[in-house]
Amino acid sequence: MHRIALALAALGLASGPAAAQDLPIRGRAIPELTQLDQLMRDTMDANGITAGVLGVRFEGRTVYMRSFGWQDRDRTTPLPHDAMLRLASVTKPITASIIDDLVRDGDLALTDNAFDLGQPGGGILDLEPFPLLGDGRLEDIAVFHLLQHRAGWDRAAAGNHMFRDIQIAGEMGIPSPPGATNMMRWILGQPLQFSPGTGYVYSNLGYLALGLIIEEVTGDAYGDAVERLFADLGVPGQVEVGRTFAADHNPLEPWYDQEDIGFAVNVYDPAGERVRWPYGGWNHEGARSVGGLIATAEAILRLADSRVLFGTISGRRRTGSEGPSWFTAHSGSLPGTDTVAWQRGNGVSIVVLFNHRDQTFRSAWSVDVAEEIDQRVLRGEIAWPPCAPDLDRDGELTLFDFLAFSNLFDDGSMEVDYDGDGALTLFDFLEFQNLFQDGGC
Image (cartoon, rainbow, N blue to C red; front, side):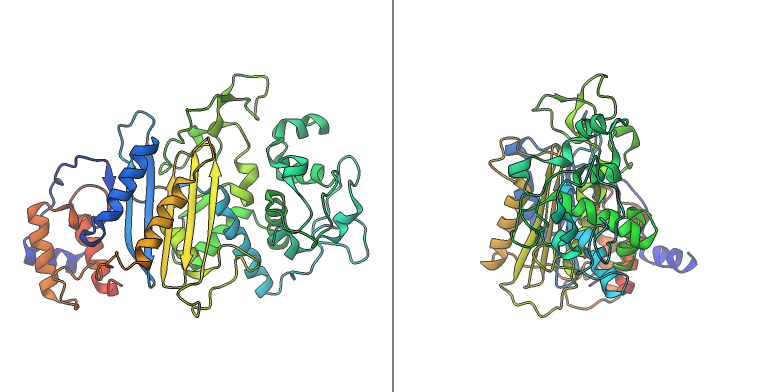
């Protein structure tokens, strides 16, 4: 602190209020990327979205991180730039990444049988099907079938078992919601729609099973495995299992706004009052490995930079040798949630998180934003900003950058809101100094 105090004194810096903002936007303004501000504003205004975060990384550094809109339903508190939002199915590449690490460490093999149903050689999960084994082919499901959506479940033909909490609990004679383990037992009592490995159908159920496999193999809760993954990526504490009810939410979560649809039966109290869909229409904790995580955009950008997000090698480490045309993405959707994580071999990763989705299902707004940014990059319409603390834009970090910081701070410019809280204080200098010392890139 002594060195920091001396630097502040030398520069004549003092804390003070930020210039008033006309819009609820948080995060450091980037002059070179104001078109991204406008793209988010336009998308949210056109579609009635009240909270959103956009993050972009380029060649291993976060070049843009801003939040838009409101954290609360009454629209009185701006959404913080480090907000944590529900990911929906963007959870799946996280689950796949943990499985990949377990395979690399030799704790399981992709060819291991997922379920121990009495077959020769057994399997990982020893669960008793309810009421009886629903299909002999369940014995043939391997871990890689679950990862690649080839296990044999087809929700178009059989319905979406992931959202049958009340039905499953009723049939099993237990309180609702039944939880992940009992749900999996019930699913093992149902028939498959095709033989494992013979087809591809996107499936939530495979990732429900993978979450249970992670817990069985590690001996820990799924959330602990998630924390280890993101600690290794340098962003500990920025991803966790979300909660169903608003009273239990992380303080950085927004209101999940889906008030354009009716009310749902509360899966925790089916005989009680109906609830808004994002707050009891399903068991969010029970879907933890399928779509139940919350995260900052920064954490998911780190994931997109380091792991493959979708496809037959989802969760694998990126090699860094992908060509500019290489691309994949994973989107997520639930009532009150619309998300995407986007990656391309040209060094660009994009994350968009919204608290509202299109209930007509004609559009995925997060995907629209990411795709538009991607196309602008490919057309050469986006100029990437220099390293954050290189304020005099000379390509070097020197004392003159501190002087530039002092001038901008004294002017009340939001461009130096380095901690993204909407105010210019001592903490902005601390964040600037950290970036300077780290090289800023």
